[in-house]
Image 1 (cartoon, rainbow, N blue to C red):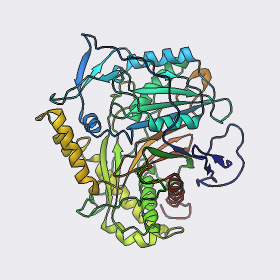
Image 2 (cartoon, rainbow, N blue to C red):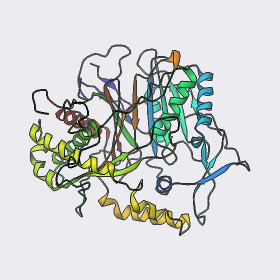
Image 3 (cartoon, rainbow, N blue to C red):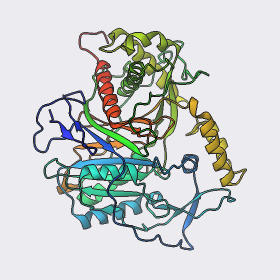
Image 4 (spheres, rainbow, N blue to C red):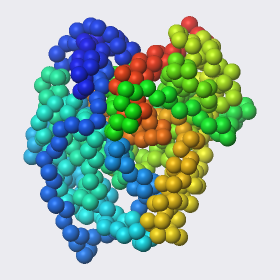
Length: 497
């Protein structure tokens, strides 16, 4: 149980066990259950000028995801991924810098900067620098709230290698520990790839084994177990639901963020070798659906199908893990079948358990089919847009124009479930990670992202929103709706499995 505490904007956040609100006093060293962060704020010491490219430096063209992201950069909504790792003690600065330096050399794909480009070139290219242009590890002082604001507002530059920074924050309000807060430029790198590099740095720093735990064994699905009549996609020509706007500051730049610590919802027991009816990821998808449906009903928004974009990552977590943007995006649709459940599930108060169970099983069948489908990272349209038949400047203009035109048909929300952290993240005398949070960008037209990761039997939630669409009060209320909805997806012992 934790006490109300003041967020970055001067408001108060609190919780009670599985909710984002409550009132019990927080003991020294205990993590806060929820915290609101608004983008913008304290700066960092200036980085030195990037080195000129050496003749032997290797260049590689931008992959599809990198190029599309580069085309759509917006100063009002920086393309940052934030990762914060809570440690029980503070690592020694010089040793930590040396560990990160060697970790980057062992994963040389992270040591990239963008090569200078002109609009008539056929490609953007990365320069593999071999050595960092600047030291990404900093001890900036200040508070965790200030560091989180920087993570939302200040993107590491692409013209200096590596495209991330790692801040060690000692003033966390959690006793004698610290937070290693990593901010990533998502044009070059995603969160799981950067966490792989951090795990290597932890091994080099503390000497402990940071090899990934084996993934959970999931039996192959029997034929016909994907759900009779269930399609992988429920995409239709109908425009999807958009999270209803609620802000006192329309047009405000940047992102806001809510951090929360929740229990992992229970699932039905299953016999060895028999697949469960649904996964925690399916429960998160349903909780996201309920959150959006209930929010929109409370704001009298039109009833439209909720569509959730979900990254799927098939990369191994070993030292050979490919570094970069390695996920593919799939879209989980909630269509005509869910419309019949809308009235009962979107009403205030606890939903009918049988309706929730039906939605969980339908969603599980749909996501199994989506994950098994073989498709490019951003679909075939993404590959087409990045085919170098036209100069990169013309492709950029076309991509931005198409994005604006297709905005009404963009999905409702991004749900990125990192899953169980596979590494102990053991930094020797600085200790093992007590909790890990990720947050993904919340760019419009969606304007909302939900990112989850589990450590120590708990679920770390980061809800992030575009401040042009939602203010901090709205973000806090959405967090409460999500926590309530996730509780409703939990399996009860007295129900049939």
